[in-house]
Length: 305
Image (cartoon, rainbow, N blue to C red; front, side, top):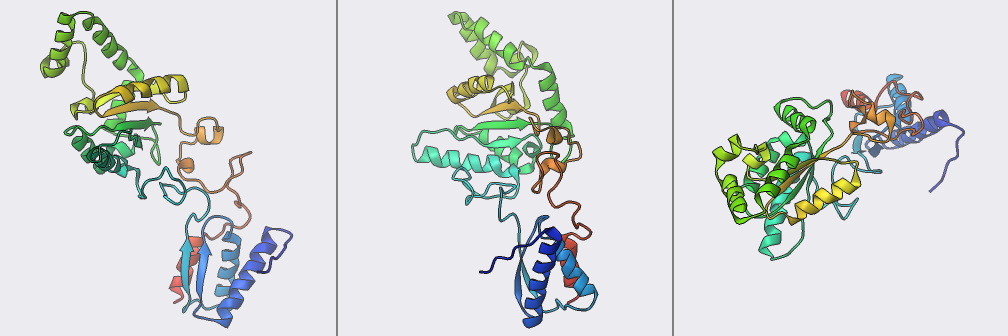
């Protein structure tokens, strides 16, 4: 393999385009492996220019396009981490996968905790609600970490978002619930009242404690807890570990916490980000040659067939 040294990005783009062009001319039915991202954009722009000038013909070319072959994937990927147990293209699959793992764990008589992490946006996906409904009807325990950062690709909207917002604002749900437990647990009569109140829906609805939507599904609830306060987070997770049934731990976080460009993002730019300059948050390669994206370049090639 020959390594070519160049002075700058423009020269790199020109040399790379010339090498690809030479391959196409020598073998018009070549199979090309094309990388995505911002780095090869200059090369693709130069190839487009050659095509538009009539110097290249892509009609017999086959391309294999590589997506995120370096860096972290946008979703779980087993080849990246031993902690990614399966691969999926959407976070709404988290609860269904965890449910299946919990059933398998208990069938094998094993003893460990399963903790799926799911965002407030993915929680309202159909697969999530189906899994939540199933979890409430079985005894296979799962600790659900609900990461509530009030963002999906954009700002979270809808009824579920409003529900989480109301809990966030009050911040008193579990304090009230725990106070009620403490008051009624000092003697036999108090314990009997608490146990009866858990079973009698009308008493709970009109008494001291209201159910959350999760408890209506049959899944316990802990929170909200500040996801950036590790001491508080550990305390609540230990409570979740001691619970007998599945439980939702409602963790409130700020998306991009600690990096101002991500924290201040309201357009969803940082939902999925290409390589960037940490000093100013700009995308690497931006401004060098971004007239035509790789996807548009590919469309031009396909139209030329």
